[in-house]
Length: 186
Image 1 (spheres, one colour):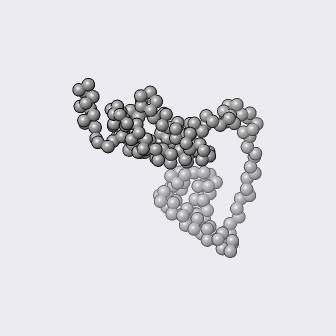
Image 2 (cartoon, helix red, strand yellow):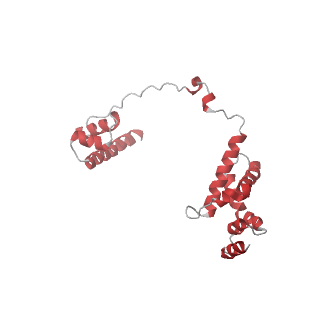
Image 3 (spheres, helix red, strand yellow):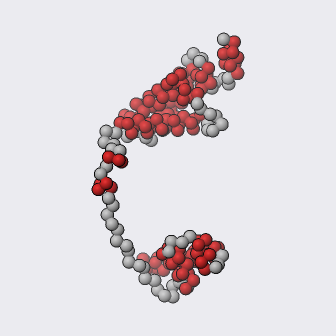
């Protein structure tokens, strides 16, 4: 009993979580008053209908007080503020509850493979550019970057140039292309 009294004295005044975990009377009411609006706001973004908000909020509170506040006792103040932590718990709980409520949810393993089929996409014809629009070096760099799907370092190594030169030539070529096609659209 003396240890509990010392623990209660060491808790900060006005902290609903500390009071709740210390077993103080009416601490649950103070905790709910302080964090109810936060929980409602967090589950509102997950709820399918406005009527779900109250049910989901209730599920969050049940989860928080379940097993002698086991989840609340796991809160670590060095990782996040209590309001951030409660928001994450509320959203996770609400999402889980909404998933459980969906009667039409079918596991991906149960879906026939034919239903997941994607129609073939025909490749677009290659874009024809005026010969004088880009320099030979810019054409080569764009070809390696986009047609050969190489990254900047690979292009620089292949052409024996600095990677910044590749980025600069790419940037200048893209400016020329944008200006050319913008003029065509007007």
